[in-house]
Length: 111
Image (tube, rainbow, N blue to C red):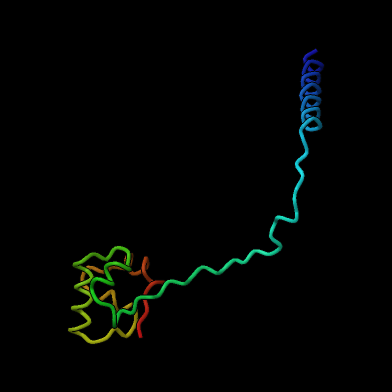
């Protein structure tokens, strides 16, 4: 008895769904108005920050986790020890740890 009731409900549901699909107005697609080709320009690459040329405000603005004090520490380290030979040398600056370096690794370069 229960299965008969269940099948009756399923039948009624499917019937009403098919009637609604048939009765719905069909949308006519105007192919003349749609563009034939879409030009998608590639995402512009962000300019990298050169550790040997950037000033403190640039470092502070462009790098995540670098505030005024750390930016000035980077510039002071560069002035005291000469140009950076690699991006990893940034770990020698007081206050710069592995986490900050990892967050900004793709934004940094040394020329």
